[in-house]
Length: 482
Length: 94
Image 1 (cartoon, chains in turn red, green):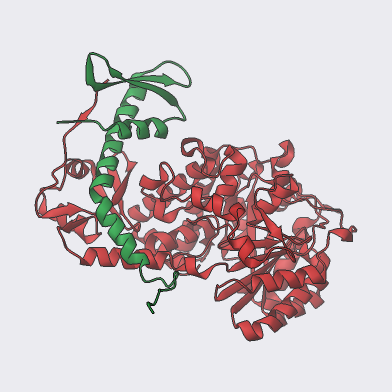
Image 2: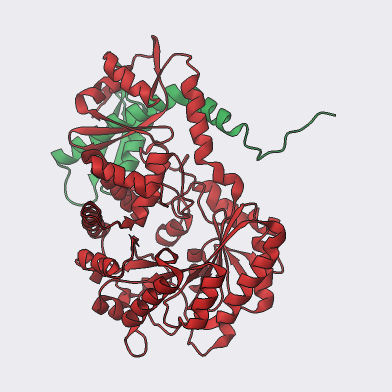
């Protein structure tokens, strides 16, 4: 087979600026400029672009309006693109905003897909000590970021509530001098939520994030605990937290197992029934206990994408009918797609969010580039372990080969296929995921689950927003809410 | 007319490598002609696969050409974008 193409016209008054494209459907080509702004062309129009600068004046004007074409030598498009690019990357100089404290590995649940190495709830040798917590805080406050979110993770962090209290009080003390925008989140199953904890959360302005997998049978099957009453307890906890802290201070996360895939409307209805106004239709991650055969993780990307599409369409209809509810992943992407801004989400960033957007301090003082890196360590893979509190300095960790190597090799600006992908400005690199699933930091993109899943979501959101002005406005509204 | 850049064929081979692998070589009788042999991972080569590969190569040709044409202005945009970030301290001459 031999292939030949006409050379595009490179002379004349107009010239192209960098762009990428994707065949969105059989009749439409999506073009995006260097910063991800979109334009849609028919196949006939795109054929003109293939041949060089289009002859059609109106097409030239449309392409120029999104900085894909410029008059030769014109400087304004360069300056505008540079300004937008700088804005998109402004967080680079403001690392690291999210600091996760694993205050205990203990948990009284035994979730089928748990991603962490939980320990029996009576085994306090897996609790974080005050000395380790203080070193973690001193390390965290070295970060240049003006905002700092401290998230308590486990196990179940409320099993070591004295350490939660200690970290909150100590962080506020340290912040009198540092003067950062400080926020706290407890990621909890809410089973142990009592009046004392609620009173503390109310007084200290702490947010609660819990897990809710949908209807009781689905949730309790996935999240067994003594008494098999996890759902009843989390529902009770959400209601009490909403009453005491206000509806905006408690949110819930879904973990999608194979059993969830045919029940998306029931799952969303459970959230609506609890007066929750956001849901994160996230897939299960391939870490920790989630890799076990019984975890329920074994489903195809295509099946998950169908689940996601059905869920998104249902959420759109709920909004159209007057119940405001936001899908978190769509909101994160919409912020990049429609506002030239970025929510700071760790898993959709290039350079990757590990270390730069999030750091994890394990109960034993181990410092990790991400929560997933910690889970890998529990499985015996120490690739993303960056050091030990009390031994490694901040500079040691942030300039370590363990952090820089995965960052530098996985940049989407240089990774194969990513570099020309129309959706690159909305996406990111995930060296932990690719290391886990494919054995290297970059991954093989044509078979990457991360790539297939994100491409599917980007195309879905683009199509839905293009077809329906209401949906576009809804996505923009979500973009400004996250 | 110009020959398809080899880079475009290589990129197409990578993009479709989940379903097909590729041998390619210069034709000894016509060195400007690239001979590609497709090996589907499952089943035999069919028309649909050939069309997908041709379409992918066609798209990659445009990507390679636009990449080359716009490289100077892309570098300029990045230079302008990151020239005033404050990430690197300015060196003040004594």
